Image (cartoon, rainbow, N blue to C red; front, side, top):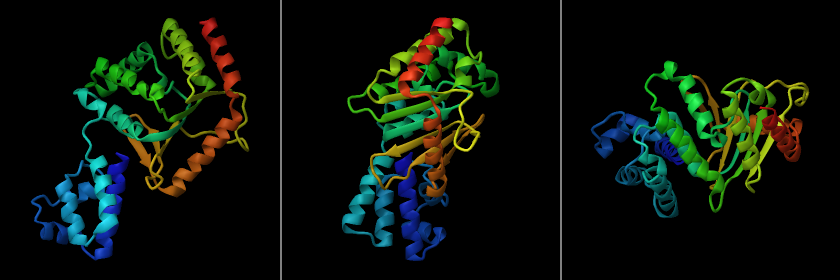
Length: 280
């Protein structure tokens, strides 16, 4: 997803430099679809490498610049992700899987639910069933299986750095049967032992910065290529909002720092989680 968006942005910049309109490009490369260029430039489709070559030839891009963009194009066109085996996978789970495929650091704050990468199968199933009436067309077991498959990210040979701040309200709210909640809390304690995972609990009495109150949960993705933009994802009921503008992203980096500073240290957070699990 990120590589498609970066490729699209680079191609749009090249078109602007060439002084060409979208219609002029479509005409000169001989594409039948008038919307094809728009879909590529907005990162909404997996590009065909032959199309990328056509555009780069038209824009006069050669040498190292051409090689760089072709490499990005190959990544953008990749169809080998593990999620391809989930035929009934919802587009939102697919989107998360694509983002996680290239991430080197993921920072999250959650104020209503346990993050998907940390959910047990029973907790995930409860969550999916709870919104089934809203969405109606979800394959429950495929969604649960996808969330479990995504978690392989945390135990990979070279895992990304994963940090999550979980609001205390998430841990105390009744969102699943008691036995499911107890198992989920125990799972958080288990995952906190992984070298790449840092979990922090944000107590309800904690002061955040100058009495800041978080507006919503969010996830902040950083990628291996420093030229790929960081991405902030905000989850809503019907869709996910992706922010890549550096001014927007920098504000969420600051929020990450505030929330981590206000939360319990990792060791105290694990003790807190273990204590809650025993109470269930």
